[in-house]
Image (cartoon, rainbow, N blue to C red; front, side):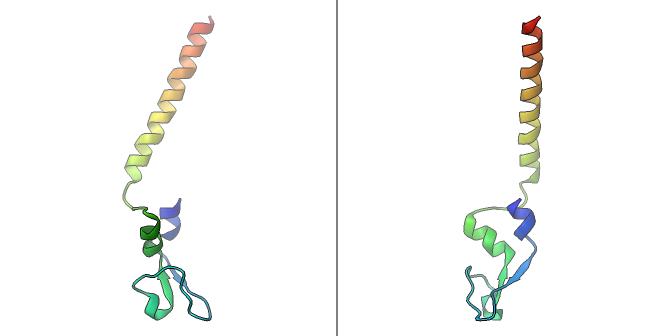
Amino acid sequence: MMVNEFANRIYGCGSDCNCQFQTPLASKCQIAGQGVLDQYGYTAGLTWTWVGIMVGIIAGYRILGWLVLVLRK
């Protein structure tokens, strides 16, 4: 969710130009969203990795549910 929110955005620093994150746009009194992601260690481009993890979790729960139903007979 953080990658979706910050990846391609530019934020203003406020009226006194006090930027919380130092990015290449700090001289313009702006914050690059990618700079925020870099500060926290998030990288873009891992969408398919996360999709694979979610599919694995869903499959695991489906198999677990099926086993419970079979063993309950």
